[in-house]
Length: 431
Figure 1 (tube, rainbow, N blue to C red):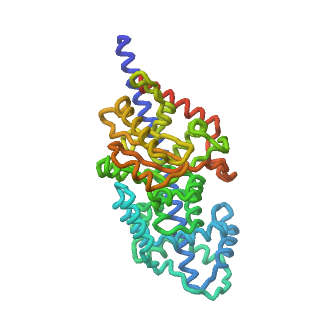
Figure 2 (cartoon, rainbow, N blue to C red; figure 1 turned 180 degrees about the vertical axis):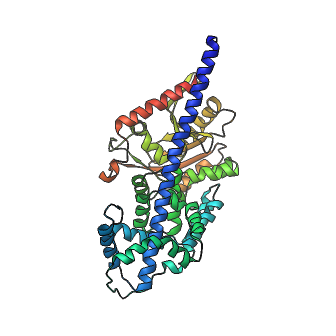
Figure 3 (cartoon, helix red, strand yellow; figure 1 turned 120 degrees about the vertical axis):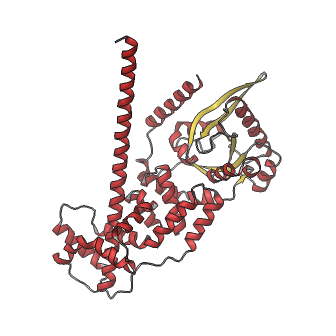
């Protein structure tokens, strides 16, 4: 066998091993996801079962405390059945009856291609809908009778699934399929607890659930996004842009959906009166947190990107690429309120990126101007007449990171390592 044949065989075997390794990794992800979904379904059944017997027997809320004690005594090896967690299970079941699960699945089908208008309409529809509780989950006023939980009723927990199916008048297999097909089954229990504690309208609850799935948020990140009112900033805010006039309908809808106003950046090391360069340095230094705030599908390309045009040198503040939009995004940062001339400067950089970086498979480059405040009427007038797509948003600098969230954020070393990797990848791509 020649050396060339040996090298070919070696490369073929390496490719085979890589394919096997990829399948193993994907299988592990699927197994973890399946286990999480089954645990959630179990919690949902438990919550429904408790609610049913509270109603049927006239038991009050004290039954949860007695049930937790009984489980701890009879099944000491079983974890996750504290008074607090059992109460959350009941709230979980009450919040997502079968009618809501069906509605979530139907909404998923309608929002395959998201836009602000479609999402707003569907969320409003969920908020306004009157969902009837199945008999299983109906809670009537109770007389708070104290009932001792003995081992016999505790042993009946094994009949939870059958009770749920009987009262709902649907085979348990069909109930399980319905539950697992809904977005409710796709986030972890800690995230559900945050949503339950947030008391959001049903449609907004659904939106955060979907964002958590799509963007892979941890429960801590979900909490941070709810506290920063991401829904209001991304969906409910009045956004200033010319996307409808400059982009085709599918892309203009998506670009408008991805735009936020205001953006909130955590810049722990920024000065009180930070200028554009200081803000850029902090954003790049904390690139992971920055891209998290930018939204789904954004990748870092360059900072202070140099372009030589004629005899002059120009430097674009930040250049990103959005995978969903298949387009470069030029970001200009201003440490002052919006001025009309800023739109002209950004339009210039969009033209340059379109000419120098945009490939034949890329869509039109989009510009995003971030200012420390704006007059919306002036900003909208300033965009009239430009052929390039430009969005204008405010930004806020947040320096305080709650202790409870610090563990969810990367260390400076991790961020610097990631930024180095991103820049190395960009260099290799340009070779």
